Length: 177
Image 1: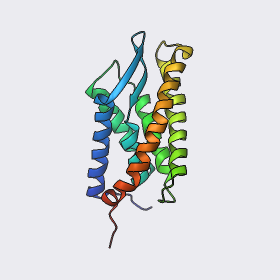
Image 2 (image 1 turned 120 degrees about the vertical axis):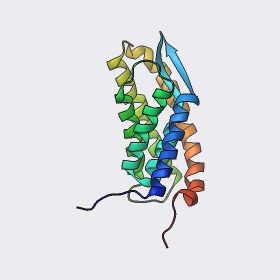
Image 3 (image 1 turned 90 degrees about the vertical axis):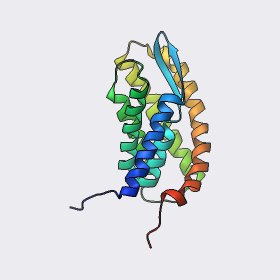
Image 4 (image 1 turned 180 degrees about the vertical axis):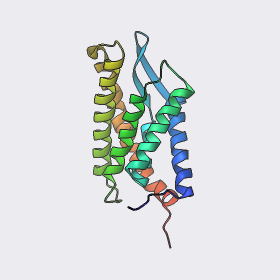
């Protein structure tokens, strides 16, 4: 069985991406509340999580997603911690990594597909279901806010990822010689 290990340089980059994600979650986000409960979180925490998955694979994307979501929550807690939301963010990083697992080439269509699938599955469906299961918020009350949040995040993430993926590649991915 082949042992998997990360180079120190890669671990440092992953830690930086997780820290950026935590800061985005805690301080660079807009929360919409209904009846004292947060119904939508407009943040860019998915951006560094997806970048980790794209550059370093599904495992790295999942780890960065889990750490970024957890650390971001504890920087500015808004109630009791629920690890389900951290696992959902980890899944977002895993899916992003799976899109780029076999082919490291980037196309706009691949980026659009990745963002749409991750945001619809993780943000719109799974997070909404988790909120309705764990908190006393009716689904009908969540749908408008969650829909608006997803509709805003999808084009924003597509534009930012399209710009950042190729511009950061020479910095992040070092060729071995």
